[in-house]
Image (cartoon, rainbow over all chains, first blue to last red; front, top):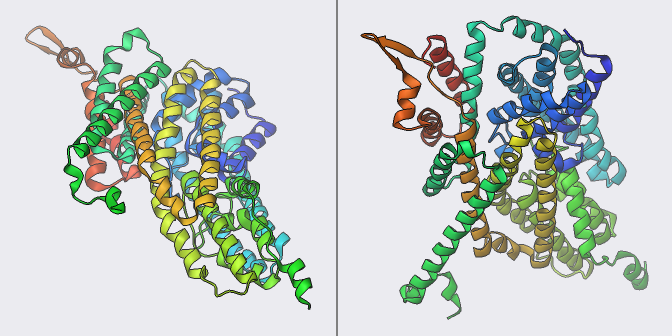
Length: 274
Length: 285
């Protein structure tokens, strides 16, 4: 079995701290935290095995579809999950499905670490930021709003990720790969294939337009029927956009026709001028 | 302290479009760095506005009051909420600073500024979360996913670059809109034209989820049995009735669960893991 070096573990640990501390390019960390894609790529680069890493990451992405934080709370942390599951899978030469079995529990653990960061930030904002705001001390106010939280997230995530990767990953990899070929693997594979349904259902629910679910069904059966044609996602996206525009145009035209026909006589917002 | 001295030193500088753009960039960077329990992301908005506040309040006591004003609880979404509110607060603070300087009665008081922020943050975050994080992000990811499955790094880079740039650009637009129109900007953000854009995006999002579900949700039966010498393979019978029925039923059940019990992802994750695990162990799937 391959091993992970100190440098490799450290690079990934700092990467995770940068994302979870939200300071690596600031607001751009949003999608890097919610989606495993970038973390998977970084792990692949660190191990020099980008192609395999991408295959594993794509499988992990499917179960984390629809994960985002309405109001700031997340049930799972895809970035943390991926940064451990992809190295484990690369070390143990695991299938993408087996990597999912590692990613799910780690992701849940990751959300506790984010809570810890939340808690420590609260102390800093109360003890430091409030004090320096009251003094009008601009430099220290900036430091307590930006500098301290960055230091805190490095102190939380770097040691945790380093230990998990350097000492934990080889052990997990060995345990999981020793189970290959058994019924456990079949179960992992089935779960991995099915869990993608969760992310998709979450996204459909969050978009929240019940009447428009027909568009989901239309696309679902198109995808099933056209599977053998290997239609690219961009083609599908273009078709989807056209269908959406046709629908919205037709709807607004009907609406304006109905209004022209005099049904808008009842005072609505547009008639406030009269 | 002479009148002239006061005019030179205490007059608020004009806040320009550039200042607002810079404040938006600062908010985009700070966003959730100072995320905490009692203030949430209020310190990030304060940090974003600090250069503008310094231009406006030349009297140190006024500046301190402005800092403290923005330390109260504030939470919203990055681009729709954050962008618009950064612009609106910049315009409100400019108007207030003018009133303070001219020693007029303050009409734009602390309550009005706070209520403007608090009144908008929830509504805009609701739209922003479902459109940006929930829809646009996953449209980009859905498009790029096949590249990742072929082992190409573009599968990671394209959605990241597109989504980060998208939020940066629309947030800038909303910030300028908020600054130009003040508090009435909010009705523009949720106005008719925007509703049409939101509808197109929602339909496209649902459409792409359908495509993903059809291609990537893999639930199939491995059950086979013998009935009086005849072999039955359950999956091929199901395919004969309607291809792809099991994945669709799976997605439908989870959606039904959310519709009934609310969005509890962790419960659904555990539930589905257990159900699939058991069905796989006894050989049905």
